[in-house]
Image (cartoon, rainbow, N blue to C red; front, side, top):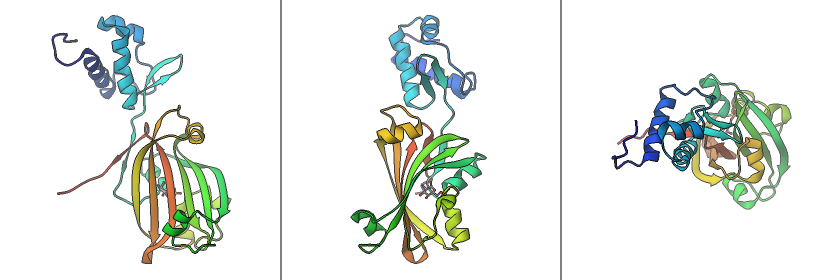
Length: 240
Ligand code: GLP
C-alpha cells in the first residue's frame, strides 16, 4: 500500500490512506480507528510516523483523541455560508439540528467607549450584555457575547434571551433587521471559554464580530462569537 520510493513522505501517504477510509465511510463517525500500535504493525513503519499522520488529521478536524482511550472519527464540520444575515437558530433548524442556549450572564451596563461608538450611543446610554453558549443537538458550538442598546429592547428579559434574539426583534418588537458587517479571525480560546465549549487548552476558535443594523442604519447589536474551529467551516460564494 505504501510506496517507499515515492517522493511523497510516508506519513503523508498514511494520512491520505486514513483520510480515504474516513471519507468513504470505512471508518465510522464516533468509532475508534485502529490503535497506533496496530497501524504501526500493519504499515511496517515507526510509531512516530503513524503519530504524525494522526496528528495532522486531528488538526484538520477529521479525527479527535480521547485521553487514554484512543482516536475517534469526528463528526464532519458544519459548513456555514457567510452570505446571508441569518440567526443561529435559523442556521441550525435549516440543517435539521436542534438549537438551544445556555445563559451564562445577563447584565445592564454603561459600555466601554468603542462599543458605545459602534452602537451610536451617547455617553450614559446603557446596553444589555448577554453571554450565551449556543448548542446544536446539545453539543456546544459557540459562545456569544451580545451588546444590545437598552433603549431599543428595554423589556428584554431572561425568558426572551433563552430563545431566538432575532425572532424576538422581528416578531415581538416588529423591528426590521436590514444588514450587518462581520469580521473574522482565528484566535486561541480563552480559559473561561474553553470550559464552556468543552475544548482543551490551547485550541483555536474562530472569532466573529458582527455589527447588525435595523433599517435606517440603526445599529442594534454587536456580537462577539467564538466558534469551535473543529466544528465549523465558513464558506462563501465569490464571483468574478
Ligand atoms: C448568530 C450571529 C449573532 C446573532 C445570533 C442571533 O449567532 N452570529 O450575531 O445575534 O445569530 O441568533 P438567535 O436569533 O438564534 O438568538
